[in-house]
Length: 167
Image (tube, rainbow, N blue to C red):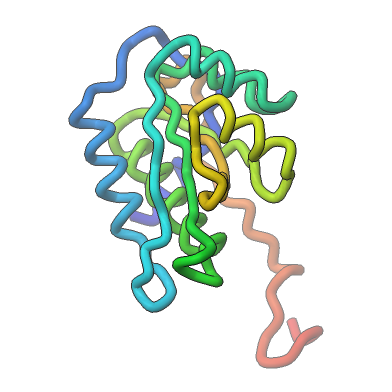
């Protein structure tokens, strides 16, 4: 498991090979296995395969371009009415989804949408998402067309023992 975590890298280039329905289901099951405050499970997901819609998502901002080329894009939604912790809960679900993609031999990247209102509005309009739902991020996923080695970014200077400042 620790090697899998270190192997999860942000993949922005994909082959044309499709992502299967079974792989999508496995990633969604992993996402929804995430913890949530009071087990509220305030998440919902829009699975986008349509090329025109993926192109619209790619135009959300300058760092969402890879959505156009990914065979599938997951749009992670949260319901603030169901939980004050919707951001944390949907973030945990997103990390699970990305780890599942890695375990399946796929690659993906977390593209932030929240807290930028204009980005949320763009995605909401493109996909017909109701106002009550918040858009945390989009996650383009596909078969990697780039390879990145496993790594950690561990920095002992960011670790404090018992009290802040104790190394």
